Amino acid sequence: MVDTSGGSKTKSRAQTEREKILAQLDAADKEVPQNPGLFNISKDGESFSDLFEKSLSERDNKVGDIVKGRVVEVQEDYVLVDINYKSEGLIPISEFRVVEGARDIAVGSEVEVYIDRIENENGMVVLSKDKADMLRAWNDISRAAENEEVIEGTIIAKVKGGLSVDIGVKAFLPGSQIDLRPVRNIDAYIGKTYKFKVIKFNKKRGNIVLSRRALLEQERESLRTQTLDAMKEGSIVNGVVKNITDYGAFIDLGGMDGLLHITDMSWGRVKHPSEILNVGDEIEVKVLKFDNEKERVSLGLKQLKPDPWEAVAAEFTVGKKTKGKVVSLTDYGAFIELAEGIEGLIHVSEMSWTKRVKHPSQILKVGDDVDVQVLEIDGANRRISLGMKQLETNPWVELKESYPPGTIIEGEVKSITDFGVFIGVDDGIDGMVHISDFSWTKRINHPSEMFKKGDKVRSVVLGVDIENERFSLGLKQLEQDPWANIEDKYKIGSQYDVKVVKIADFGVFVELESDIEGLIHISELSTKRVEKVEEVVNIGDVLKAEIITIDRDSRKIGLSAKLVKLREQKMDVEDYVKKATATSKTSLGDLFGETLKASLTDAEKEKQMKDSEKAKS
Image (cartoon, rainbow, N blue to C red; front, side):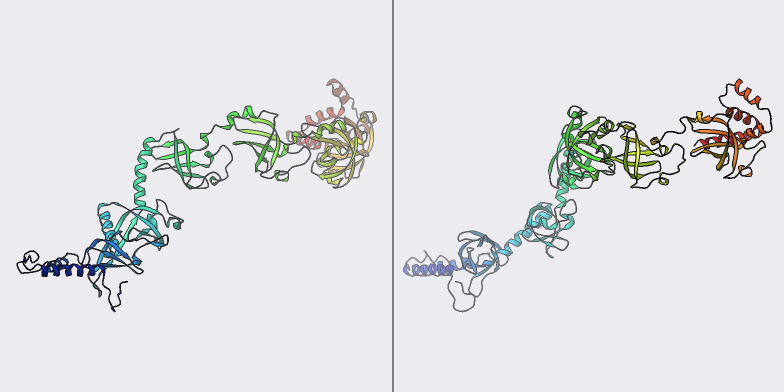
């Protein structure tokens, strides 16, 4: 052990060797006095031992020098190094790295050291390996900075504003100089070795600033030139996924980026590019479009595979039963993936024969496997219509066989609409009674006047429309149509006492019998001109009127109080009959209508036409 405390001193190996050599020289000098020139070679009479001492002291090793030495001994706290000086050098063992639990130093190994002091209190040279490494590093860095050379280093820690890099000495790598793009996870670079360019160097202040981005930009520009020279539409190129967005991914093609849009990633449905790609993936893509002037590249991934729609006609024929997976639901139906890149639509109307499906989520959910049948293929527009209900027996066919027209059924009112009521018949199938089939004679403004939900109702089957899935029922058909023999019961020219039940601008409706009404037009109310109906008649009045027209198909009877007055006044009405015969009129109503029109102004004619249309409705 070397004692550096200043107490009892142990001689070093170099000191011991030196004393031994000097003793041998002194003995030899005394034993050979008869030939003084052999060892006493100096004209000043200096002995060889004196010259040996002088040569050691005159060596040019001095403080601040960097010299090479050889390790002669490894002690617990220090390493002894022979630098070919009169005494050995001393280096703290802490300056040697620990590799796998042991110091990276061994006896006999060569090491470069810095002379810190020529001799300490023990007569030994104080050396430093760290200072030698640092000076050498600073020299290398200085040369690299001056010559714009590349230097290698290892990132060792994260510091404010960037990273700390070990390049022999600590240097600073700003966050903006780490990569070509802003770095989000800076910790991922720690422990990795890269090449850098020195962009700022100040030895006095110990300030070194590095840039990795500068080298990457140089490499990128070189690659970019090569890529541009080789780029052409239709070519297959390799790239690395650089960035992923909602609409696609940017691919590094080597010095330039290309956009792989989400629609060109797969022939199938892709919700987000991350389903297919990850940053850093190496992929092969096809150049779809290349704008050399703007240096923009559009890429495709799915184009490397055949278009599945080219084989759709052969694979999915109309009527074929197949399986698929629900990939999307909309208000109007569900999209089913039949194969990669092939989707079909099941419309809500094709999901069930009997259920009223308002939304496909009532039956299906995304991810379900379903059995379907191909209904229609539109290859030009890449559309396939599918059905689910077609895989089951059509209940409407059975319904038509089970309920022929005229069958009387009883059911519960399921719903009421403006145009009629729906009555439950079979499980999931409702029959509809239109408002026009409620009564032969009554005028009904809304179905709620007669029914409420839950009422038990008897009805007659009118027909089953399999194609349109309609089951028509009727209520009035339970009774005989009173208009069926109306012409036998009421004759044109016969007179009746009738009661006014409704007043309109164009005339009055009168009751001939229960549920049978007729119309006395305003022009047939009196022999005098009537401007307003209310001036002549009121609801509840009983009038004597003569039937002048009967239209069984339209269920309309025309009456005239005016004609009764004329007959009572014994006025000749034969002219009307003659005119009717001459012009082949089928009723006195038509004749009266023509006569009336001839006597009316244009405005009155237009009003009468509107009133007539209103009465029909």
